[in-house]
Image 1 (cartoon, rainbow, N blue to C red):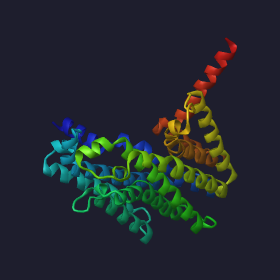
Image 2: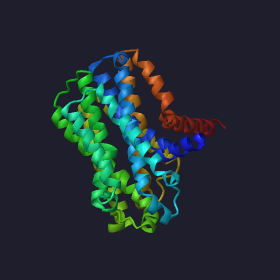
Image 3: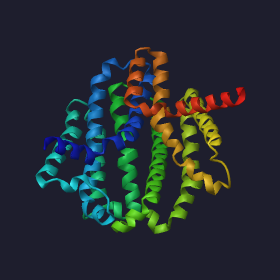
Image 4: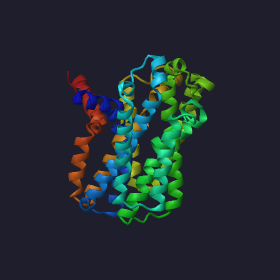
Length: 341
């Protein structure tokens, strides 16, 4: 019985779904400060672990509450929902545990007005997104704004506020950089939300959920993604990398060059742009989730070799980080075989 209960909880929290996507961009903030301040990670291992515990608690809480509030809608759409099979006291117990995981680490972490205010904003966004009578996920524009806040914007800003204080970091023109980062994260959030709503529009219709994509149509949403959000995000990302250091810009350009060649090798550029542009929607995610954290950790390791241990740990915890290099090696091997045979 206990085994089934634990299995149900893990299924409801869906950690394997969000951990590899949400955690690396937040960790990249810590890695950036290691590089910027040219320091080793050793003295900050405990606060880093506590921060990740808080992050995991808040992320799991968001998915948990969302599934809890989606029991009826998922039943209508014929979708499985692990929370539906749990008793009320079990749901309340899991909620309290996740709240404790999210908040208790801040008894040690820097609990400033900034970090606590952002935490309150994060949990508020998670609640109003899913819980009636607010349930912003059913309200088109409000759903997008809420999703990008709790899923992309606020977690990174919590990391910026906490780690800048922990590491004593001073970044030139911080105010202007924060605005650029906020815009990039907002574009990233809108891109991912629209992509998800386009993919899930049939289930949303069956469940009676009124999303932004249903309001304006899938084709118009796809056009916004391909011709507005994606180009703006790429331009601002390049500008941010240039400001933060030429090494980051060269890393970004190398990433785009490798990905463009891979997509060419895979035949993704055949036909008109309307037919293949949608395949570029996912490309920036691989930069944020895999390429950027490793780039920053590699730069930090070049300054402080001890950070190489953290780099190894990151590659073990997030094995998907190596996906793009493995794709590249496979294609290079195929090209070599074609030319030598």
